[in-house]
Length: 400
Image (tube, rainbow, N blue to C red):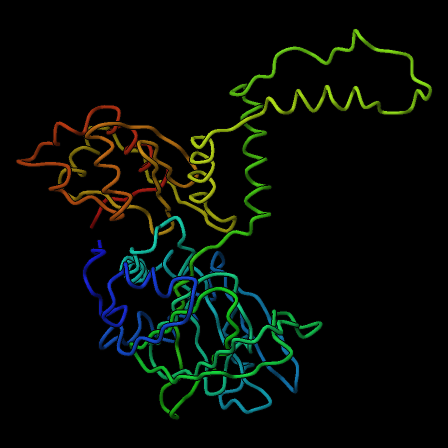
């Protein structure tokens, strides 16, 4: 885990504390040679292979004769064969693949370098490939992003414009107008941080031999409307599960004759308002909501259950190999409440400390949980059973 006081080459020599105070959600930051000798995590062919997989979210964005087009995967070799090998000003394209960290261990390791930002804010690692001139046009995002350059080069233009009007009918949120205020050419290992709602435009620059690949580390920023809607749904579930009980029924023994039988009276509105005001929530309810909501997998995420294994055999493997989160798993915690892929569990004391280490580091090494061939005494039966259950569900795997 990164120290708050330790300067990081990843941040251009800034400490995480300095970066958060001066740049996070405030202004862009260009970091030259953020990751020295970074050549990327996969080849263009490997990225295209991922885009052909059924459960992988991918897009091909094309600009043809003045219009933007977008198609969604999974793709095939035939789809790629239709794209121009030599792009022109009037026809260029980009391949984008989402959540590469769900399929590539090296991608998860890359994201761990950004652990000065809470895991609860992390969205995913998107990787894009583009021949010369390729890009998705001038646009703005509603989230924070670090744009790390892999192979090739990309020219980034940014603008502080307030005109955010979009091209009508385009399949992407592309700006009608773009006024460049600054631009930088990023080479392998360089990185650009952009806060939300800053207009930007990335253009692939090829030297004729090496096309452009960019690694986008995105951080989730739910809309306030979405948070409110989801939280009210969460509270509804609590009411339905009798965790919040509103006793009694509507009563109106003081009912008086109305001039209009179809009118909803002010007295009825007042009574129901008083009933609804009994629905209250605490910061613990909000914490539970955030834990389940932010760790809940996206709709396209599928976990493959592990084969059933006896507790004895499980213990032996756990001692020998340790355990790790599945690449698609998201684990968060608040005090002694732990949330894994939308499911909640409570542990205290030493058990809680072990689970915090699993959540922070995404794995437990053998010496984190055992010594001399025996599990640490902190691994009690309840914790062992929970780890075993998560393993069977496919949320955890033995660390190889």
